[in-house]
Length: 285
Image 1 (spheres, rainbow, N blue to C red):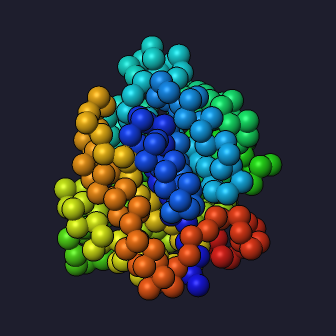
Image 2 (tube, rainbow, N blue to C red; image 1 turned 135 degrees about the horizontal axis):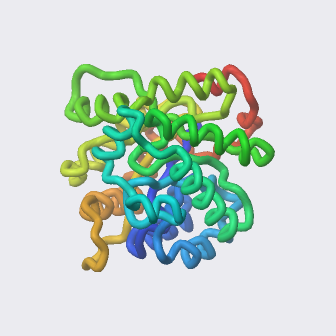
């Protein structure tokens, strides 16, 4: 069977997201989750993950776009950017490297402090880890602090498809620097997922059960599918994709999900399984 990583992003952002991801972990419907450590209840939700530390990959979702920064330099400068502003500042080479470097390190510190160990992988909220300047700092963080503890880095590169409803969103994510980041990972022999899937338009989440089998078909061995499930919530948290998260949770919690995986010949696994965690040509996708 084809082994893939199914990763739920944004753990720790709010109660609905964290509870939904925990429920799916308990039911073995996920093999990884990526954690936001910059939100107020991170320590509480980190404790809930501890019993599953040896059964799934737990990663750090480096964040520069939502909530409040942990570092004093970014707090003094302006706080986080929204994604369009961050992209513009990045491509114009106007970002303050010292401030971002301090923030990335403090987010890693917050992860290690709460879970008692480094992350199994790192990636970026809204894929910001692949932007110019930021990607160099992320890889410097990896080289300085994460090579002793085996850790992989999420690569979101996908070959562009010239048809389909998600082409425009896929193009935008790829234009954030996906191919350049993949080349850096290969050149520096950094372990990363072999392929990437999960991009779709959130306003079409009611059709998620029809879209997910396409991800299963396209993802490669040791590839990664990202997802964003959450319990349905009456409110209390500003989350522009809350409705989409509910549809995703319902699908992953259903028998249809299990049947789709069986039909596709797919099983969920961790990057660490079966000796994959080595620096080899497999990492080049």
